[in-house]
Length: 252
Length: 294
Image (cartoon, rainbow over the protein chains, first blue to last red):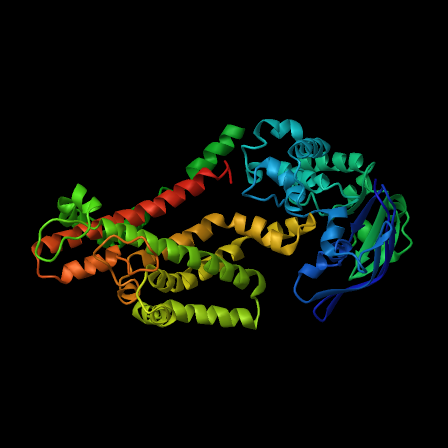
């Protein structure tokens, strides 16, 4: 089951440059939340703060508090422990190129020392089914490399890989920006199904996509969260002038 | 309508002028010529080795030890095995050390310490091999008070490290950051990501570096002169003076005997064949483990 996320006065920096300013936000469990905004507005930085991926960049640091479910992200848990509960799908599909399809999905469990072969088989199949890829690859699980699939398939493979560790939250950083409309449609359908089991936070440049998949939408501009509300409200009747300008296409 | 459009575009492209054709052919010719020039010395050396050496290779050359001075016959069996022993010792020490240093440089060495290691490693790469032989002499031979395969192995290992370290570093840097992030995102720790994801993705490049270093030291003579020293008899004890093909070739080539000269040629041929087959064998083994489309 998914869990909620609470963000309290989050500031993020790259060296001396501040990228996020005092973000406060509450993400509801088992819902999809979309983050929109022009390039460089900090939405990717924000999502990377939720699973402490931000701090893997040299000189990057974070201030403030994030709670995922009952535990605190920046206080007391190790980054590796946290990331097993918070899966991530990246902008560009990034399967492990030297691993088979099976090994790609099993990677998270195998590398964390999970051994049982039979259980692994089960989880791999279940994850590939959840990401609607199983039927397309079931004959080549061990024979083909993850990099031999098409872009859309690779992205679904990456989703399966993230699901295999059985996270509670799934972060998606523009998961469809490198994909064609048909693959995008498949991933969006997937998000719809995944919401039942996971809390989803999705960064997107595509406003129609935000409107289609998310119940809640946040609008970022220049490192600040300008408005956060029900998706319908953001797109039909936003309270802030800047949100209205952005969603109606007057800038950005 | 569509036909008309296609036709009009096709006819509108002007024919390629004779001038452009000529330049095209000229440049292709130049490219082929440079390749031939680069490959020529290699083939010339190999052909000459075959011509000079293959006649002296027979069963006794491959199975017997050297005969005393003045007696005809005998072989280099002990030198072939000795070379293998010394190279095995060198690889066991040099490869892990070199790869480890390469990992440090690429994953943890984007700072002053890394720059220092890079600089030292480049300098080490340029140190004459005989100097490295002296270092191994001081490190091992003087302490043990006798020559040994171990000392030879240490000398060759020192020579392997910088090459392996720098190629490993380059190959690991070619692995996209996104691949590492994918592993971090799954909750895989940093050291595990480095070993199981980054290094694994770069395997074929790292192996190339290792083979390059191996092939380079396999033919080294100078660092073995006063470390492994050479031996006219069978010796499998790594703590005793050991013969090596390169040493044997050196001794025989400088001798006044025709029979030894012929054996030196045969030895050179065997050495090259062994190096090429070792490199090829590793390549085949690595390729067998690779997946379709990887």
